[in-house]
Image (cartoon, rainbow, N blue to C red):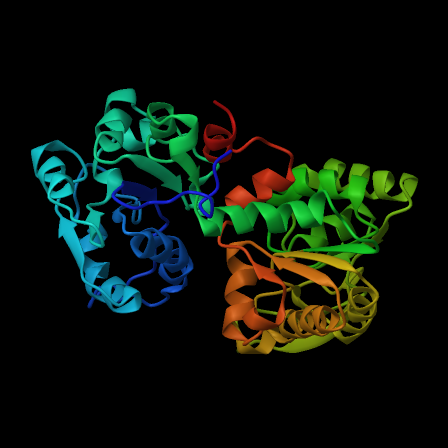
Length: 399
């Protein structure tokens, strides 16, 4: 497999699938979090420094029936140009005569951004002709969009068919995402602790089943923990519960016991009688929450026990918050877990944080540079951990 480091881009046009699906302010269309754009700069710069030119393609949002003003990538041109330190040209389509002309006129050292790929329904359908039109714009294809690698779309997967083995490769971001995931799942140093949070067991059932086979400790927090407590016969009051997942929860607990995996649930919870910041709050035993109250964060005993386990770990995976951290009264558990992961990393553990909410939490609370790796891919990372082959990865790896 060709790597970006071994390839000389001088005189070549490189088309890169980037993930510029960034959040925009609804009124001003200004970017509210530019980390995905920043993550692509290293790849773009390498090509330009070699003397190549760059064509960028991405989706933004979920347009329903063709072009929509609010999803136009033109909104990000000025900010992305500023980050890159040079002008990015923009063309208002990604295929057709206008795109072909703009790509043909591109000189060495120049950058062109194509309009939103999803303005064409053929992108998500993985249409061959659409992929071919994109491929004809360039000499080399790079996939640097890990966040969409689990989708067999035209720009993430099908396009690779139109490039020879030596002319398709991963960008730096994609390569480091895969390397960091493999470090956790395949080259694991033990003890390995997986911290899984969030609202629903159904979203995490496959990864939990996979983790029971390789982790030493599994910490479960967030709303999903109450399905486990109900499965164990506890009283969970008005806490979130997926009744149709109780059997799954029982089986997971049994499997963990058989495999000698420590399955840690929060001993206590911070509860409230309303889903909000302004209700009556109480600390309760997680197996005995009174009627009318719901668990919205892990409690002090849980924080202490979880922290101790994390501090004794050599490998840590964190996916999902410990509570409703968007509410100031229920953010303590997530902050304390972030702190513990950062401290364990400082002591030599390898830590990977992935999944939208846990990434948002480490960024918001200032821990992003204190963990080993923060993944840009939520769904893609989960599917990779579940052992599924990601189409966007396979398209580069296989011929």
